[in-house]
Length: 172
Length: 172
Length: 172
Image 1 (cartoon, rainbow over the protein chains, first blue to last red):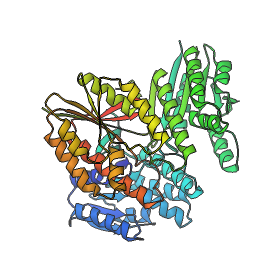
Image 2: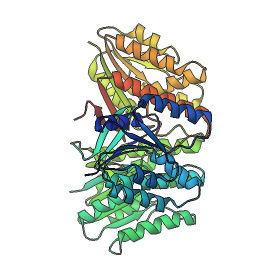
Image 3: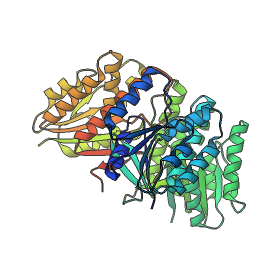
Image 4: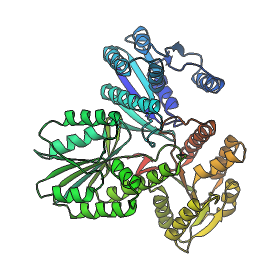
């Protein structure tokens, strides 16, 4: 029986650390699906920090664009998969001028077919003022729609602020 | 006895859909008070999507500036009114160089006088970094103050993220 | 026994008013540690508004940079101290090209040594889109890390939206 946990939060909210804790609690050899493409040194040092925190028993898969396919390959009845993060993935989809709605549907369909335990991390990016440039607004819209779609199929949804996870689905 | 519900959330958070669900649950012929002025095609297609989702049994009132007056006209003991959204209204007030504090007071006074069921939608816009331009900071301040004033008179307040509504007033 | 309360929220969320209420409830002569440096009239009028709301029984200490030291001087077994706000302080540290991680550690170490009641206010700034300029990203990262570190040592953490405080630590 598949288990889907979705961890939502702001930048530097501790959402990745919370998701890694869920993965460590769920099984022995978690698979980490990274969606970031490494463009510059700022990003490289961030990714390196995440990697050190996780430790060597994690398996790493990189899927900047083909996330549904990578998830399909990694999934199995005993698998524990952490996807970090969806917002970077949908940015990649947008920047490569692919259809974000189709990508969102493909991911959600794949999640419905999964047999293992999947933990997904995403940024909430809709709580500031309206961005001035159109691409940022497109990203914000696509990201918000993706977050809604994933939250709808997840068994558990957490909102993380200042390192504290509040479970918003199911509530109480 | 008036009932005031306030739905707060980020962009693409599902706040409008949640508010529409509350309105559908509250009565047969809800009145939709739209505050958006249609400037461009991007906005027009968004509004069209909202309209299709609501269906033909909704009555539409447009009130980009005279929201308290429109609310007064629509209100009655059996009315169900959905105002979507306050943040666009306060933006219009600001852009038309009217007094945002006076507008806020007029709306809150009108809400206190209502006899029907009113559901209000607003964006939370204060959780990003400080905007660089002064008008954006003025908007953010006016919007935050308006949200506090409306939440203070509301019977119920919901915070929506990723399509999930968390009731923050009353809590539990 | 020290008591640490941490109030997190967006701009114009009502977080300062909530924190002032906690301080008023906690003791007779609260000490207000202000971190803002007054640069312009916009900021001055904001600070004046806060001052009027608090009233004359508050003692004012200004600590734009040396916050851990100011906290050490003000602390005592019967003291009630309100620090407003951490996000402005970490901005000052960043702008003065000091080490934000070291500053964060110094504050958290000092909090661990406090014997009185300390209430800290901070902005959550990570829930919008990624800022375009590097200094804003550095601020957002430093602020998020500081918020996590303070929340970890706090007895109580509140998230404030639209004037409504949700206690996220401890939950329920």
